[in-house]
Image 1 (tube, rainbow, N blue to C red):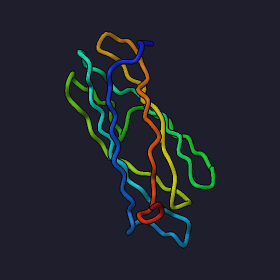
Image 2: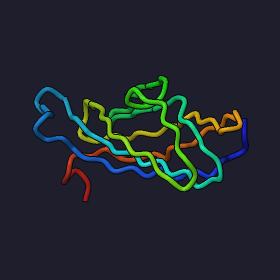
Image 3: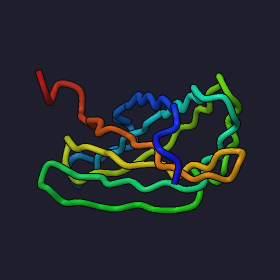
Image 4: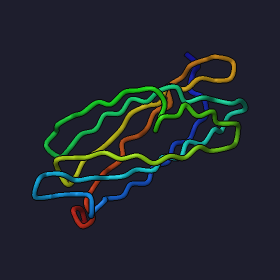
Length: 125
């Protein structure tokens, strides 16, 4: 594994009101991730590992190859963006995780994804 390679990960979230059913404990959120390669060589996103925690403390782990069916190569000083979603049983939760990345030279490293909040608007003041 490479020591930390310079990658920036930004997240935007949205509560999807029309696809949610609070009476059935179904809260749907979308998230858009932007991965920026701040290094000097192409990197490829090989796999993802998410830990999703709802307000009751229920944890769900999601692992798999790539993201949204892709294993994108990200050139130096460029960004890759994708959107996905998750369903919670509570109106508040958190996601965090990591991507397994590989440099053009075949060195693997993990890019951590800091915890971010999923919340129905108005839940927190």
